[in-house]
Image (cartoon, rainbow, N blue to C red; front, side, top):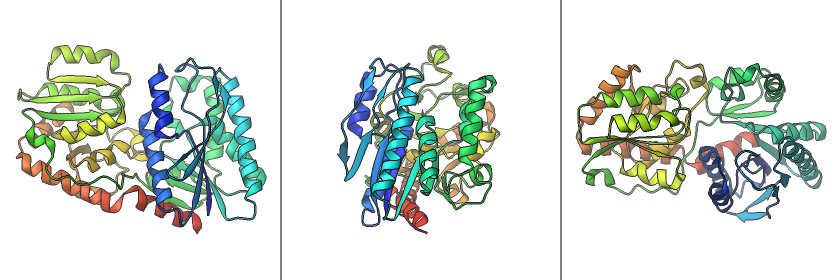
Length: 399
């Protein structure tokens, strides 16, 4: 089976170039998700042949370079083709739309007598609309990967804009008319799939190349480290986490925070109020991965009361679990029950409740924490590796 994979994903070499030269860094979590999935598909190359058509994660506000035309690349046996564009408002989207429409139509034509499927990431406007239109005109089946619902990525104030409201209407219509769905949670099905088309739950994936290295480096640390990496938004529970941590009396513990978001401006105040809080800002994902192994406990304080949590399975949870360091998380409604034996849970999500939970788990012996983290690592490597998850997707699409 031939797969045309359409997304903003790019090779590590290209992503490094964009990160080094951008004023506003593109999200690394979505890049890692799609790249791991592509690696899994490449491992299963006897079952499929994959080609990537990529709209580079470059914005007019984030990068000064105007003309973009990168050569094709071959990475892990997968051909990457990058859509050329002029990095100016509106003009960029028109370029990407037209070229995507032509490329998808041409791909269909040259492979018209072969078993094939188009797989598209829902979160990029220009390529989604163009891909959808080309596939429908060519009568080509199309599958969509949904890592987030567009409606929940836009604030209520932004939704008042006429342009944004029209964008959401068109995107919602398109989202309801795909042929196959691949979503992170079962709850997404009722939200996006009114015609009961085939739906596969694939809550996340981890790198199959990760190896259990035995003893964690956290055992050799003089200070215990609580770590959060991701969007630092109040709605993600980060403010509650910080305030809960500040109630802890122990002086041999630190809270390390990585990422960007609406709490960036107040982070210096928190750090000056409590020297145990250290904010690192945005760093390379490879750096974060190294720091996860050094931590004592990894934390995801995302509130379960927010509606969007039904439709999210944070990629950080998978990255945390595969590190071998124990994960402390809220009981997210989109998290399957099979995970509950491998994560520590926050029951009371108030500031006082989180503080008490932190104190309880910090009181556990270091060896107990390490053993629990390694058990979680073994679970996700055995059941949720990118090789295994990609094979599930291939089998699903072949049906």
